[in-house]
Image 1 (cartoon, rainbow, N blue to C red):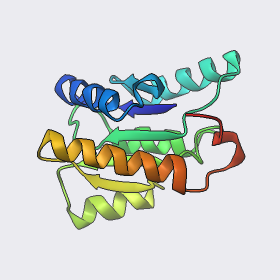
Image 2 (cartoon, rainbow, N blue to C red; image 1 turned 60 degrees about the horizontal axis):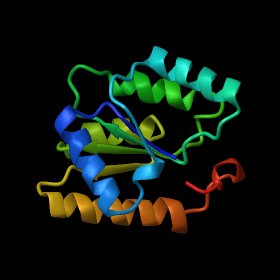
Image 3 (cartoon, helix red, strand yellow; image 1 turned 45 degrees about the horizontal axis):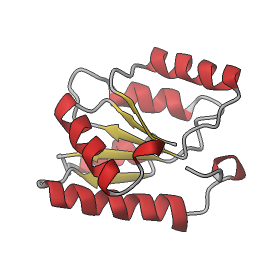
Amino acid sequence: MIVLISFSELETALFKKAAIEVEISDHVRYFDDATPDDISVFHAQLSHAKKAYPKVLVMNLDDQDKDWRAILGTLKSTDGWKNIPVLGFSFSKSEALVEEFYALRGASLISKPDTYAQLIDITKTAMRYWMNVATLPNEYLTQY
């Protein structure tokens, strides 16, 4: 499972379209209104249902209404979530953002694409890497 966190309606629609094209749509979940409290609730639901955790989390760092730092901090301090790779998407390439994202244990900071074709390419490349190339802890090796 791949979880997208805090993307706008338009970005979510584009990701959904890209997920269909890249043939991963059955494995993607969208969590648009995430807060640190929501992450705790989601964690409790997965634990209670004995469901697998996501293999990858994809987070929007540009949403001004959401504190990505608090959400990432909650993820990285919660058992079951702290070892899941978090990919951050942002238009910004500021050194401060880059340093802060990696200091909070983000796995990969990706520039948001300018075109849909670039989104498809990034999605294919990122999913190929994180699902087929990267070695993840055993608990994340179930089929995505």
